[in-house]
Image (tube, rainbow, N blue to C red):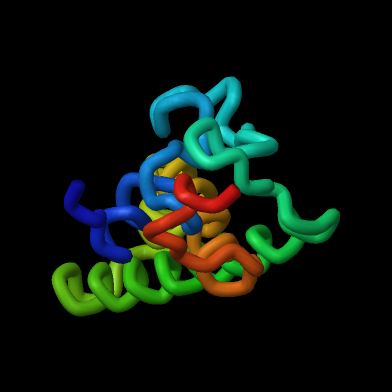
Length: 129
């Protein structure tokens, strides 16, 4: 059995321990259950809500994504449209945030689990007792 790379597992939203089970019970396009996370990995049973502050930590990462998005949108608009009106900036930032909300929210949780969570990759998780 081939092992999934770290980047592929993070992009697909897989468990940090086994890199096979999904962290999220629904697809990224499901706005109603966008913030849902499995309590345990469906594959290796690792706890995916490692601490009570899991959602607060992910919120800070999501905030960083939003700030980076705003800065990039402002730079792009200023460069390509030669300083447009203020309403163009506001509408573009609002629309881009709404469109990218699912990805930013989902990957903030993935990054938190992989970076701060105490789960590390164990290719032999199923052989342990």
